[in-house]
Each structure stands twice: as C-alpha cells, then as structure tokens.
Length: 301
Image (cartoon, rainbow, N blue to C red; front, side, top):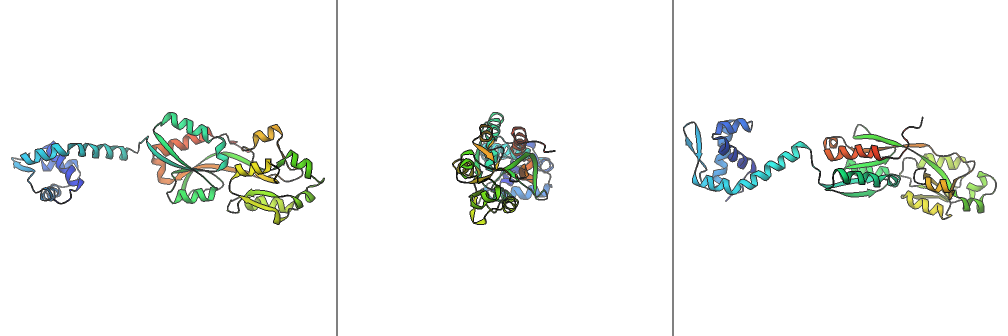
C-alpha cells in the first residue's frame, strides 16, 4: 500500500460528514474536480473504493465505513493540532530564554509569575553577553531574550524594561590598603575588571580608565559579571559592575565607588524576540511579565 496523504484523508472525512463532493469542496475552499482527484489518489493508495454515487450525493462503501471508523482518532488529533497551532495559543512546551547576569536580580520573580499563569511551561535558560544572545535569537536558537544595549528594531521586536548604571567600584578593604591618595597613581597599579571586548560598552568603559591614567596591561575581560563581582569583593582589583547587581554591597559598604573616577553611563535593557514571534501567546506573555517584574530604573531623566 502506498503512503496516505493527510490532505486526502481529511477530504474523505468531510465527504463522509457532509454527504457530497460539492459540499466538501466548499468546506475545504477548493473545487469539486480537486476533491474527486484526491479521492482517486486515496482509493488508489488503499486499493479499495470508499464512496459510491447516490443521486446528488455519495454513500460510503462497507470498506469506506471500516476505514474511516478506524482512522477517526487520527483525524481528531489532526483537527486538534491544527486548531491549537492556528490559534497561536499554547501553554505547554519548552521556552528558550537568553539573558545577561544583570537580569538575574529579578529573573526569579519572572519565572515565578510565569509558573503561576502557565504552569506547564518548562525553560532552557542561557546566560551570556548581549551580543551573543542576540545572535542566537536571530538564528532562532532562542525564543526570547533580556539584554542590555541597542537592539536593531528593523530585525527584532523589543520592549524597554528599564535602565541600569555601570559603576566603577572596589572593596573597602582594597581601597584602604592600596589607595595612594590620588586616582592617577591608583589606576597605574590596579587590576581592572570589565566585561569582554565583545560587549557594546567595553570601549566607553576603557576610555574612562585611560582618561584616568589606567595601565592597559592591567585590563582584564570577563564574560560573567557575577564572577567579576566576586573577584572585586575578594580584593582582586576594581570593576565596572551593575548598580542593580551590587546594590546590597553598596548599602552595607562592602563595595564603594572609586574616588575621583568618572562613573559609568546608564544602560537601557530590553526584552526581545523575533518580530513574528510576538504573535505567540507565550512569548507575548513573557515579554509582558518581564516588563512588570523588572526592578530596573524606569526613567533616568
């Protein structure tokens, strides 16, 4: 037996339900000759006659009734699948999310909210630099992402989720032991930690250090800002760190801004997806919740 075309199977069910080739053609938005051609293909594949003419309509043969009765579960599953996909509404499956370290300060609240509204979703979460996350989003290796910096709105759909400021900080103990009295001498001898060169704000951050007298031989790049925080807390030098990520350290005095050094700029964060993905109920909901849950500053004016 040759393989069965699903379109032909669907056609057979509508003929049986509606009683004629003409009615099935109207239901499937095609012509009566096209319906007849589909049935010839299906009957040829099965090797049996499914319908016989009866006045203006048709009747099923005994073989037709047996075949369609046994195939009914397949057709019902096909209808359910078609309805689910065409409606764009599904609340189960795995969502691939990309994010940076800074987003982790409020990411747990986003997940909790999603678990309440869509408990059957599961998540694959990838933490990386914004540029790499956006590349994977465009390559359809991620479904949605939360990133810092500029987003090409001609290629992706995005919503702002707030602003964060990058601060040059050191541990209080490190400053007590190494501060020579002025920022110029301090930067000449101090290890400096910042995100890797692929980051969009590496150039601006390093310009601040060079203007302050920093030694390029002491520049260190790191892809994980949470790890950079631990290094700076441990006395490994100064770092350009997210104010949101280190707010508790600033409040308790474990980290302090480097004296007389120009602090970093404000950075806008966005939740981003492929333009056509905004039609997905799940992706649209994640973007909405991301805006609600973000603890980033909403306005820097």
